[in-house]
Each structure stands twice: as C-alpha cells, then as structure tokens.
Image (cartoon, rainbow, N blue to C red; front, side):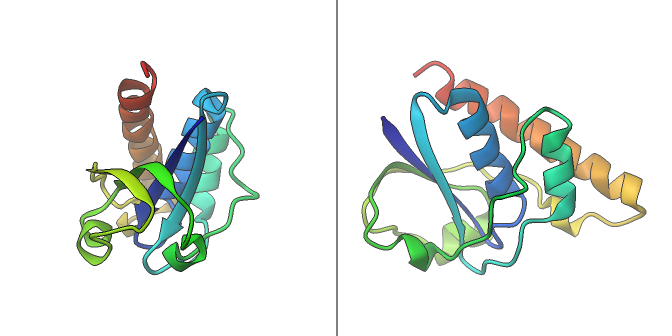
Length: 136
C-alpha cells in the first residue's frame, strides 16, 4: 500500500480535504496523512464542504510536519506555494510533487460566499486526486 502525505501551511483546509477525499475514495490502495508547516485547526467550512459529499473529516486534526519525522512516504504533495517554499525537503519522502490550490481560508464575504469557495476548492482537489491517484 502506498503512503501519501499532503502538506499545506495551516493543515486546516486543503490538506485536510485532500486526505479525507483520498482516504474516502481510494483508501483501499493508499495510506494517507496530512501536516502543516504552521498547523492551526481544521476549518469548520472544510468539514461542512466534505460532509456534503459524504466524507466526514470532523475527527481529523491539524498537525505539524515535525510530528511525522521518521515516517516514510511514497509521495509527498505540497498543496500551496508557502508549504513548497518552507518545506523543500521531507526526510523519508519519495516522489515530491506540488499542486497548488487556492486558499479557501482567505475567502471573504458572508458565510454562504465563503462556503462556496470551500466547495470550489474541494471540487478542484477531488478532480485532481481522481486524475492523479485514481488510475494507479
């Protein structure tokens, strides 16, 4: 079983949605983790957007990349430019990839507008995961 790590700055939205989607859709083929360079907490809008497609990420927690030191991964994917720049090397990482997505946490406006951005990023991540990992 291949091990995949998704990394973004806060480990609060993009990487959390990515880990939830890959686990939910292809968990029989991949072990997946996520971490952040500056972890915070999982954003409620990320939890809500994922629940709308039947994936529960409510029990996931943000963690630091340091918590995974010593772990090895076949694929390490940075999901934002900041993570790519601040985490140029991951010990134990195999293939290193970057696939940047918009930061939904930076969305402005009322709750419905902000949720719409989370949904859009969720859909972009899901489409990319299906293309990248669905045919392996």
